[in-house]
Amino acid sequence: MPPKDRSARYKRILLKLSGEALAGDKEFGIDPSVLDRMALEIGQLVGIGVQVGLVIGGGNLFRGKELSDAGLDRVTGDHMGMLATVMNALAMRDALERANIRTRVMSAIPMSGIVEHYDRRTAVRYLNQSDVVIFSAGTGNPFFTTDSAACLRGIEIDADIVIKATNVDGVYTADPKKDKSATKYEMLTYSEVLEKQLGVMDLTAICLVRDHCMPVRVFNMHQAGSLLKIMVGENEGTLIVEDVDNVE
Ligand SMILES: Nc1ncnc2c1ncn2[C@@H]1O[C@H](COP(=O)(O)OP(=O)(O)OP(=O)(O)O)[C@@H](O)[C@H]1O
Ligand SMILES: O=c1ccn([C@@H]2O[C@H](COP(=O)(O)O)[C@@H](O)[C@H]2O)c(=O)[nH]1
Image 1 (cartoon, rainbow, N blue to C red):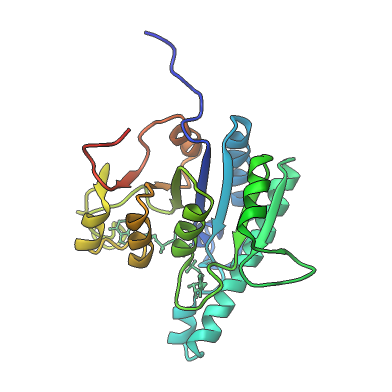
Image 2 (tube, rainbow, N blue to C red; image 1 turned 180 degrees about the horizontal axis):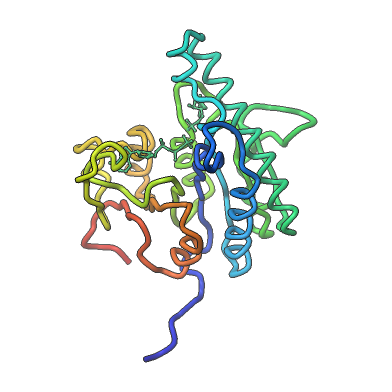
């Protein structure tokens, strides 16, 4: 048998990391060991020449909807959620830099003295010089999620794929945490996700990727080594595309 081709299949990716998963075994906060492991895995991608844009959720700290359910004003809650993503971005930059990976943090909300304000052309310049770029503060607007922010930035930076690293190992026929009989899809279309209202990613995000034909892969970020496998073309998790019969 010929040796497996281990070269990178993608030149530039947008990786969305679950905020919730950053808490590790806890309900709230950041587990440094999760950060360190993710830094190592991201470093492997940079090592094989992949340009990495990163969006990190805020679910380990604050989500606007949950704060609003608890009595806060929704927009204030969303602002707190976006600030939570900046905190996660700072923590991830710290872990990446400890692993000697050059990293930039940009924010959709100006935060002079802490992080750079988001600018697409500057971000692309950083990516071209192999710096990891963390896009924080979501889209900068309330009523959105970091899934939408990830898809938006992925399209803006002309990534080859958006990869959602989360705490389930793909897209299922129903939420696998609630329905133990749910089965996993290997591949499905944007339309199927929308029609069946599969909740792994919010529907605004799915509409955005559909309109721009941006492929999305969903996989479990707790499975060590999966990210690298995806980069060399292995089938981890679930792929969401326009046409399942026409995948390169
Ligand atoms: N059909 C489905 N297939 C897979 N997961 C689903 C489905 N429907 C709902 N889910 C849920 O979606 C969750 C992942 O999406 P969610 O947006 O909540 O997390 P995240 O984006 O990883 O976290 P964060 O908001 O902290 O960044 C899983 O924990 C899973 O329980
Ligand atoms: O564009 C955005 C992105 C996020 N938010 C708020 O932040 C939290 C955390 O993001 P998650 O995607 O849920 O991890 C989100 O719940 C929103 O409250 C936002 O307002 N706008």
